[in-house]
Image (cartoon, rainbow, N blue to C red; front, side, top):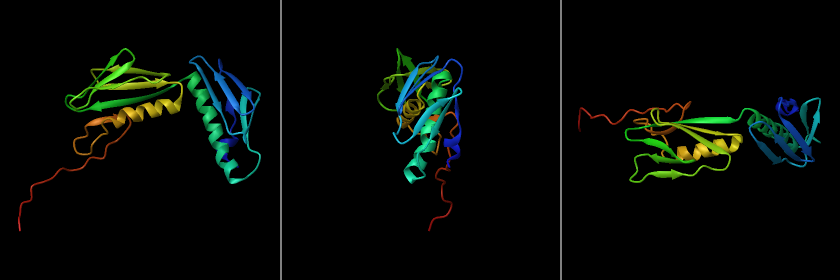
Length: 183
């Protein structure tokens, strides 16, 4: 049996959870999230916890068991604490600023890049440190938005310039060296 799927999901204080068949709605201080889970998974509330059980040991049910539990747990954490990813912008002349809710980035191209904020996502920009904080209650949206911003100028291995996650380590390469002997 799945070790992750077996673990009960505690419901934090201030969070409401409604389960109707395979539809889960979770409300908390930061907002509300809804998700339709796979109909094979049995989701139930008991003693202030959410339990996910599977009907059989078939391959699909085993793979969905831990996934369903993790998705519901991510929703609980999102509505109570929220999620945040930090991106660092490294490079001479690279800058970022916030115009309204949208980002305007100068990343070494001939034009500025305008990035509109998706629903449920909030940006926090520190212009002096050249950092962007992507905040939201949905873990998937926060991760996808961060990945899209990083994609505008991925970090390169020679000088380490580009947009990178704050905890990302760039593997540096040595540049070309002049050969002392020829032929």
